[in-house]
Amino acid sequence: MNASFIMRFKAFIIDYILKLVYLILLFILSLFVFPSLQELFTGSVLVAQFTGFLMVTLPVSLYYIISDSVIGGQSFGKKKIGIRVVDKNGNYLSLPHVTLRTILKFFPWELSHFLVYRLIYLGSEDVPLDYYLIGGLIYILLFAYIFTAIFTKRKQSIYDILAKTQVINVSSN
View (cartoon, rainbow, N blue to C red):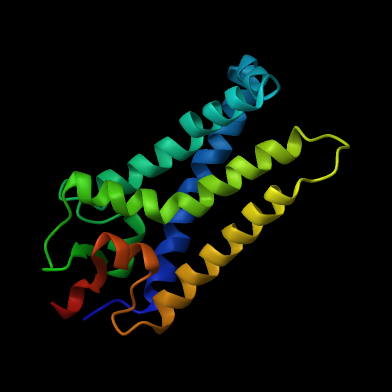
């Protein structure tokens, strides 16, 4: 049986708390232990973007890639709620398969990072039209991800449909 949106959301919240703890630790480390890291965010927009990717997006993505793959089986949140990501045949995901799913899943998140870095460096200039379009695309994708997970027959988000994955209730197997 496919996991309901509510089950997925609960697992998301648990995993999000873990991400939040990581981000708080990262903030404390960059503030008190490695203050020179802050300089990487004040240079060029490309250096700031790359630093943010290495320090935030990559570790969070690796958490999901490893934990939701055949290696880990489930993220901490999914394990607590009793759900799992599987392929269309109900098998654990290979590393390449879960990597594709994770890239698709976090595309709006990384796109928002892209936009935020550019808006910060914009200063007092007018916001270009393409920035508004990118912002609109982010919201369209987020709502589409949520609504497809709620309303599709198999409770699949768009990234699940594209990656040919599904989130199942483990207790129903």
